[in-house]
Figure 1 (tube, helix red, strand yellow):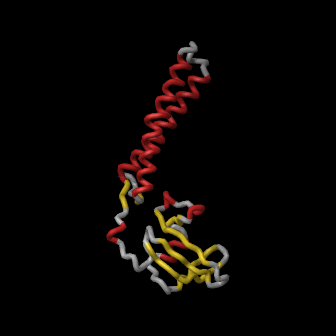
Figure 2 (cartoon, rainbow, N blue to C red; figure 1 turned 30 degrees about the vertical axis):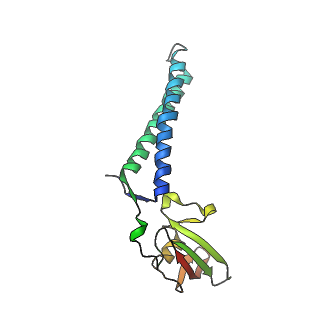
Figure 3 (cartoon, rainbow, N blue to C red; figure 1 turned 45 degrees about the horizontal axis):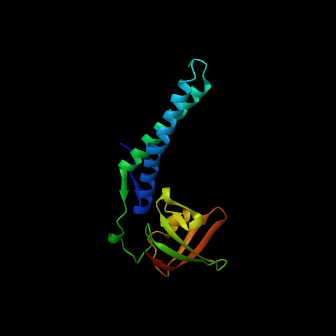
Length: 157
């Protein structure tokens, strides 16, 4: 039994597109490389053939793993979530009470995190400290530099 991973609809769509790309584009490409290498003669000393077969094995492993993730994936149903407190998929605006810096993040499943886009993994220390808090609450979050108090300014979906 594989581990259940949670996805937004957008994240699951991207994952399925990646699997489709690997199957419909990458797999035929490697098959052609193997055929071309095979046509060059003696396979016992054909480095191109060996490399193409190894690439095929790695690709099939990747496809298999991603298909397993898709099979065990669960979509997060935002309609059943309490929007008054910080949960996964919440957009949260927080204020660092030490330096008054205001930051906005969306808490997303680990596999969809992208700090450049403001998408913070729900398993990160900051997210863990924010989960369950409401507007006006103070979250004391332990980070490598010490403990930082954050005030929750806004929570939305």
